[in-house]
Amino acid sequence: MKTTTFLVALGAAAASASWAPVHHHKRAESCGQYDTIELGAFKLYNNMWGKDSGSGSQCVGLDSGPNSSDIAWHATWSWSGGEGKVKSYPNVESRPTNKKVSDLKTINTSWKWSYNGQDIVGDVAYDIFTAPTAGGDAAYEIMIWTAALGGAGPISETGKEVDTPTIGGQQWKLFKGTNAATTVFSFVAPTELQDYSGNLAEFFNYLTSKQSFPADQYFLSIGAGTEPFSGQNAVFTTTSYTLSY
Ligand SMILES: *[C@@H]1O[C@H](CO)[C@@H](O)[C@H](O)[C@H]1NC(C)=O
Ligand SMILES: *[C@@H]1O[C@H](CO)[C@@H](O)[C@H](O)[C@H]1NC(C)=O
Image 1 (cartoon, rainbow, N blue to C red):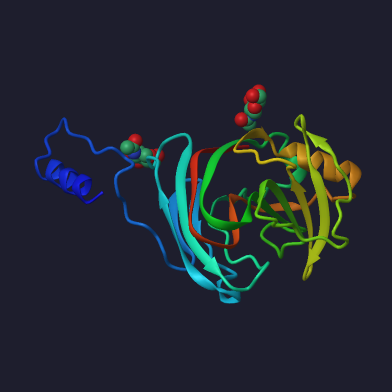
Image 2 (image 1 turned 45 degrees about the vertical axis):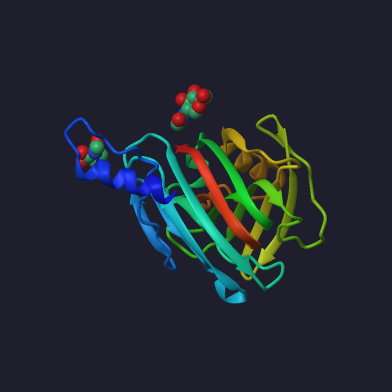
């Protein structure tokens, strides 16, 4: 590792117009609470909202070019204590402005990710908040878990799924619960989906027709990231993420 860094540094010192750095060589990591890297319509967000329920640290870093059509990024973390409690949500977030759920017929997305580390308990998930007015207080949280790792489970009133809908050709377990004033729907994939693509609007079509979800809710945010509960030396890597609506 040291040798590689040294050689790269030498290369940079001798840079000519034809020498271009390979983008996966070291960039600054962002390790502060709510550190944000702006990416046009997206932001990479070092959200550690639940950190005080345990102890640990977390950083995020960008691995793709600022203008590439898909986003590559990573989060590194270690969290302990506060068993079963979510410590954070490092994620790439988009904020549709002034869009009702019924306005967006397609929310195309693709997401490739991998995880390394010890004793990882957590999820990999889209996290979407909606409100009755544009920019208002969240009334609903819709999570789409592409993985439940190490026995992590979603918020649930009953501890059991309320339905097993097939959406986008994939079966999900749907859990329902509340978090303070927010109603939480969590779709959990029965097996890890490390290479997912689909239209997120189909989840809302289902919720509207089968779970009395009000389609006149406004989107607040659409995130894609990971919620660590606990684990050590974790490296969460998104090699490619796209979202368009
Ligand atoms: C990236 O996009 C911004 C805004 O559209 C533009 O100003 C900038 O020149 C672009 N950079 C590259 C390297 O294409
Ligand atoms: C979403 O994907 C479908 C199927 O690939 C495509 O026909 C459509 O144009 C896409 N819509 C958007 C908004 O990207």
